[in-house]
Image (tube, rainbow, N blue to C red; front, side, top):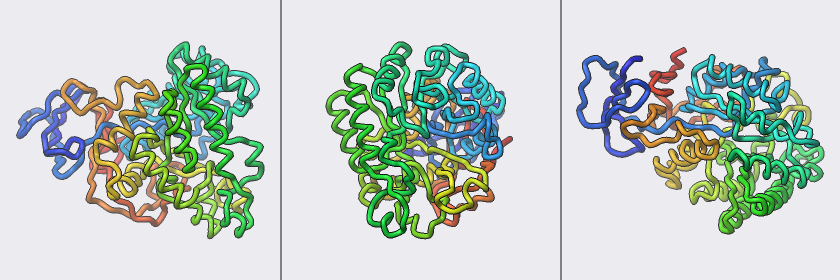
Length: 429
């Protein structure tokens, strides 16, 4: 294994230092290190952060390889600074058995670009009728610890309670897509004055908040871990804050697009901006940023949702919801949280690496940048700015909501256990 000497990086935005990476780990950190046999990486002016961990990625394989594969999604993740991603279960076939989650895990191992961590379905076929093989998936080679019907809410409260009780046995967590389905029939965008004016059926904030309120009560009652996916409303932030004050074991994530974009994007009826949950109001965006800053929201998760051209380039009502997120996630956080003074670099590391790794129970990720720790690292140029070109992205799909937008920050290098997956801003393989 090649030894790398990273010269002049700023760990967590602090003072410049040299980082020696050897045998998959950080061997030493210091000033003016010299190792003649090491390959030099010039990191002057670059921020060193622990490799990012995404709790919410759609890799589409098996079943929709026309939109994404484990390999192409892994490459996009590495280019975004990620060293681990959680692959959601809404594939075809659904990842509701040990066999399917092991298939996804092995595809990730073969790609070798990031650690692909399968998420198991909560219910068989995502149908919300009976529990999937939770224990078998937990005991499989994939060691599943996160379970979600994402794309669908586990709407039956009795079934949700049983799922929460079941995963306690192996320290698992149920990640809920919080959407009361009876309140969102035919919904196209956030419910409000704008949806009424545009003639699009509204998705009320209460549909999300009602499920969060129910589920934090259930999680508190049974003493289980609950994770709330893609929080999008100010009311949801308040509910989470209340639940945490009561000692409920609840964590939550927010997507980059919900930190940056609002329902005003729907004005042009461009379906690239159609997403579930929908883009909300300026007030919701401000509350989400504040909740992430104060730790009420634990993590940034991309909800990277690639779609084939025919699924997006259509009338708004027919288009499938979802957006790309992996390659621009860190840049969006830099713009919305760092440049606004809401988070410092240790805070970014905490919300995008440390806490997501802890939620997913990934012991080798989200670790300090310190001697002896696994060399899962990224190097970021915070001074770089670039306009997003969807055609230049690694994903098989092109449905980026950031197309044509100039964003700050560029991932220059990513290391997975000491092996570079990205160097000079380009995928190594």
